[in-house]
Length: 423
Image 1 (cartoon, rainbow, N blue to C red):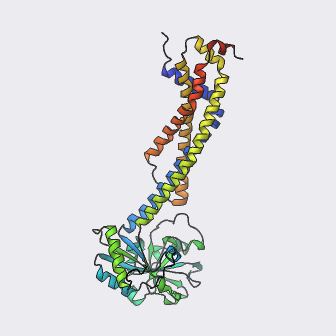
Image 2: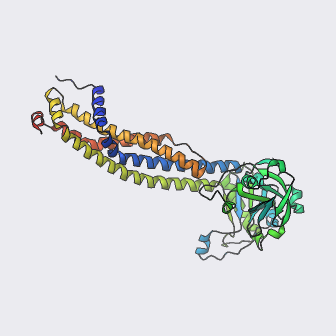
Image 3: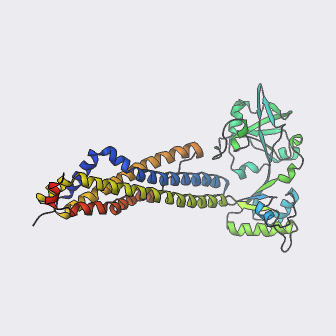
């Protein structure tokens, strides 16, 4: 009875054949490489974006709510009549009386205008102003690198004091050693009382130049709410939003329902009147990114399916060519005792090794490209779940088995005598 070839010899013969035509093997596996690399890149970017947003959520707290006096455009599209109202401090006082679970509340408004210009020494920069009260920095998760934040006295007296983001402070050459010095803001004298720690750039938005001043905390100038009245454009108060921090012992969903019900009461909304405000938590950002991640993963799965199909067809084609090139070798091996099973296994191993090697190269390329793009675009590198790495090897192996079976079967069926006569 003939003995089967040892597995070591089978693998050795498969690797030897692939290495002898290595350029052709790499080109054949290109579809596999592109498919696996694309999926891992998308997964890496999605996880990095989730990690970046989760870091912001953890810094601000999951029980922080954002309250704005505007409604989504979708409400207007429905033809609903919305009665606009600003969110003034009196309404917030009434809301806090109705909802004692609100621990902190801070108004917040961004001010833009041609007069928003800082002059420090010979340096001039156009800036974005962000006004908040003494609780604003804590609620926004902004940390000081030097100096102090705002106090109730600053707000009450409309003190001309400012806190600078790290990038604008660097641009103006205002170091922690210069705390207490004055400079000009919109033609008025302002005192530097604090500089923020670097908070990080906002993903996918401009990061350099004056046009980037409005994006992210590092490029902004912070003032007490109500200060520098000359810089407030008409109607700026109507754009005031609020951050609310609710007792963490209250579930987020319950807190949202409670706040909405009492806000409607405070703002005089009755019955079927549509909400004339927006109330959201930063958890919705995470949900949005998770939904985006699922969409991107589905799209990349479709892409990889096409790539694997093309790669699999390429593998089958090359294996058929290889069978034709090695017909005499197959006949010789059969003549010296090789069984059909031995030849079937060898050609299947070649197809699987070719596809798995493509999966490994694709995984390395995808991880490298995903890491690079995450660092550049997101300034945060997430971790890739283990299942993606397992799939990067397992799926190509299945493709190799599926598309290598026919060439392997054809090689195993060849007649020994006919094969030896083959020219």
